[in-house]
Length: 483
Ligand code: FRU
Image 1 (cartoon, helix red, strand yellow):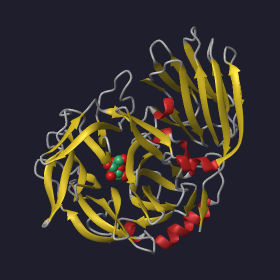
Image 2 (cartoon, helix red, strand yellow; image 1 turned 60 degrees about the vertical axis):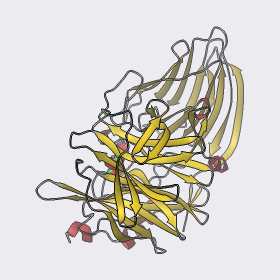
Image 3 (spheres, protein in one colour; image 1 turned 90 degrees about the vertical axis):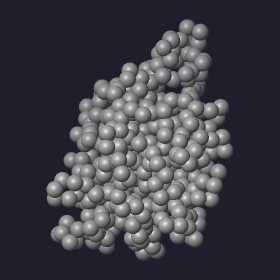
């Protein structure tokens, strides 16, 4: 075992989490999950067992680099109170010595079972990808059980990872992220049989040439049909789509298992129109389908200046997914309403900008009622001299997010189509370094990371010639870490 591997001492790392969590910094988010040191990325192993939600995430406790990936773990009964995060799984043997990569979880006979990818880099430059089974123990560690899949199927490269478990018609399945030897991204389907996990084939979609790798596949089963989520890499940017380095989105339709095929009812649709959203994971809890994303982007480390303070990235709020008239809607989980403190309501003509003072942790729900002559709505969130600006162009049905007036971190523009008749509806959450927007009752969402230089409370302005704005704004409390 190398020295690095010996360095994973759960007790010492958990103790450090306890200490670091109590430290204050204006860039510490209050109601978004993050780790107080190191780098996090994908949410992993989301599941619900005996009244508790389990949320794991990719975590490098050693620094703000994409290395030494472990799984951190938090539990919550209500998405407001959390058990203090702990280290649950870390590189420990020849099948995962270079990282315990992403995976999923499910409940079996009262136990939380996880499937994850053991990542191995050999000296000759080759990569090994082992799909492994584990079980969460009462001491907070994931105990390794057997190897599920030892190698990628013939015709596919070693970019073979992120097992996502689901059950359909009483059989157990895994979806895997894959790449053909011709460098095309694919989702691969395995089914559990008497002799182990059997490769059923790539899931045939209409997207034969759609990026060089598809990461983090997920499947949700709604009464109305299936949702296949994945994260394609290598798509060319378009004016109103695919503006991030890597994308996260879904196909909506019906999954056929044998041979695997997805009959999609529409195009691949992005889940989030912001700058900072990737590798989401979704799971079903009873009738609800819940999704959490990584509020970050790979290979853009310079855009996240908390790096200089020793930690990086956060997870998005948990979002409930629902399908209405063939469209996917995302809304913040209702449980988050328990964070609400004092509120202010406003109802004013918006020809002259309406000004609403906010706190550093805030939720705002508003509606801009457009008049016959309203052509544009402009919203700004100002942090002292810095600003995030949203402009809605009614004629083009186009929303622009403009981060160019922020001084630190990522900047730039994101543009997307948004259908609005005469009421622009916006629901958003402002935390220390994140703003999450939900447009038109969740028809679109956008996650934006911001790093205001000064720890000043933000000011919202809304302007719409001939329009009127009505809304409510709440100060929000913080997540509570117990134990
Ligand atoms: C997505 C991803 C996954 C991989 C993990 C490693 O962000 O690249 O495909 O399992 O991150 O941290």
